[in-house]
Amino acid sequence: SMAKAKTIFYCQNCGTQSATWIGKCHNCGEWNTYVEEVVQSATGSKKQSLLTQSQPIRISEIDNTLSLQRLHSGIEEINRVLGGGIVPGSIVLLGGEPGIGKSTLLLQLALSLPPSMTILYVSGEESEIQLKMRAERLKQKNNNCYIVNETNTQNIFQHIDSLHPHLIIIDSIQTLQTNTIESSAGSISQIRETTAELQRFAKSTSTPVFLIGHITKDGTLAGPKVLEHMVDVVLQFEGDRNYGYRIVRAIKNRFGSVSEIGIFEMQQSGLREVPNPSEILISQHSDEVNGIAIAATIEGLRPFLIETQSLVSPAVYGNPQRSSTGFDLRRLSMLLAVLEKKCGLKLNAKDVFLNITGGIHIDDPAADLAIV
Image 1 (cartoon, one colour):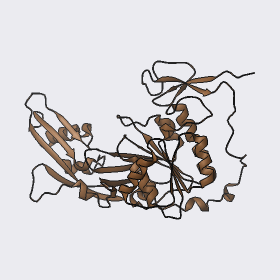
Image 2: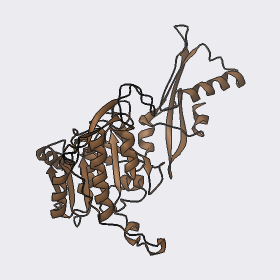
Image 3: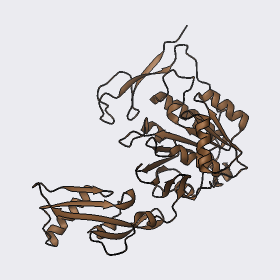
Image 4: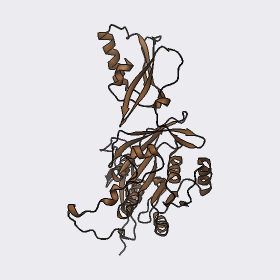
């Protein structure tokens, strides 16, 4: 007898499941985010497991020699953020707004790996010709970098079986689909299932997999929490498209610190690494300029100098404005209150504007001194 199609309602914001439709998600509090998705098709086909039966093993007998050998990519800033290189069998999610340069970064990564490694770049976003044109702009060669235009995971695994790549790049996870469930690409259940298939493959073969994930304008990954729990590393690629600088920040890392950042400059020929961040975080002035202070801060293991620009002017419209870029607004209010109370500065009738240069965000309490 045919099994009935099984459907579940998923919150498209946080991935919480519900048997019935509900208006407000009890987990994340968003309204009207529940969408019905087919989890099992009507034929009742059981998913075949990619893994063989596993056996319990003594912790002392587990062989971990392979996992200690990290692959060093040719991009030092990426090695830094990952915690010293790419861990075999790890799944790394690179999130960022559309157009920020995620594909460029990972194509550059693929082309910068040693020629002895085979890389499979799976593109569901762009054609092979577009990727070839981008590779020519990057002016890097790697004869073992293969491109395939494919979104069906069953077909992708066939390519993987014939190529045996040392590293796989998926651009992007939102375009993938598996035959085991019927909902459309980009839906929560497709993202969950395709990532689970890739995860099983990565762990059983010790092949690292990089996933590109688009994020919405308010900075959340599409189908976010589902993905964040399933992967080993979540990297966020951020920066202002109007400025050339980009920051790769680890939000989650099972193999390293989450306080490291990698800094790049977007150029015609791809992303240039910025080993000395102070060069972008301090605008070059020949003479003393009012309202500018230099502070030292630390991100991860790397100290650098930042520049704070501030402007205090009489409030014209009665209600004083408080505006800050790259620094917590509530903290700024507190500092202003301290200056008012303890230093006798009359700031309650003044507009205060604060900016940290280079598009960086500062949480370091030591930087407060420079801001004051």
